[in-house]
Length: 294
Image 1 (cartoon, rainbow, N blue to C red):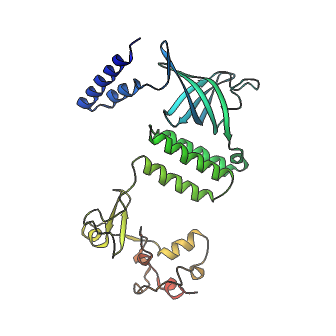
Image 2 (cartoon, helix red, strand yellow):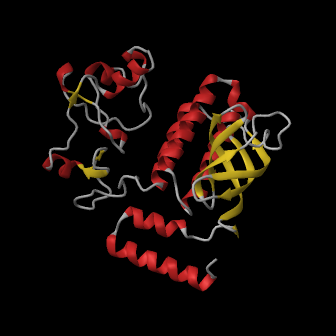
Image 3 (tube, rainbow, N blue to C red):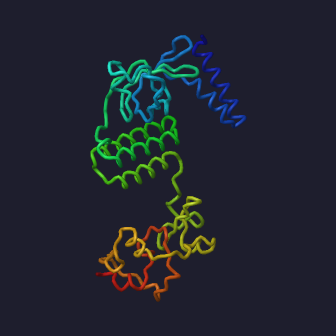
């Protein structure tokens, strides 16, 4: 077995190879040689906390688990006999269980040697919606497959979200939106919303979010690049009333704020539904404008 100096030399050579080629496969070869635990023969054992994101039944009593760990990212490991009631892995290898695992990392397959349960989110099974949300968040995490050190932040965020879902601390729609935004931000997909992407203006006008390019544009730059909001079927208030199943005349939108100038006559062909930061950029039809303070 190579010593520490020889292993470091191999990793340095693989990193130089990746730096020269830029190939993802060379980077994966470099990552595969990272020291992560106790080496025994041709295998390596690690002790880590982890959250079970997916459990696939194999045979009569075995499972293939997908586990999110803080120091090793997303791992797939075989839990032999974990579906038997008397097996030591039974209680700790259930779906959405947060447990301490002893995992043997092999060349092709990883194996769970032992596991001790730390937290089980029993409240997730109280409603179909809560279970569905937890499954969706797990699939999203598996798809992003965060690597260390981002995996530790992702694990913390997912645990907090599952706790809030199980205890019904917040509405499920709100938790879903928060997790999506936070985890996509951690994965590097956060749009640039600090200032206008073209002129760097950050205050004093209306701003529009370009969701395709992931950037923010001020009103002037949006007009120059023809990115201004296009005509849509409803004004903002009518759309909100429609989504909540209420009549337009019953909607109240910021009645205590200074009233913006009315946009002009009510013509249904010129409604605009905009992405905006400032409430003053919301559009009104005549009916909504006349009933804005009711």
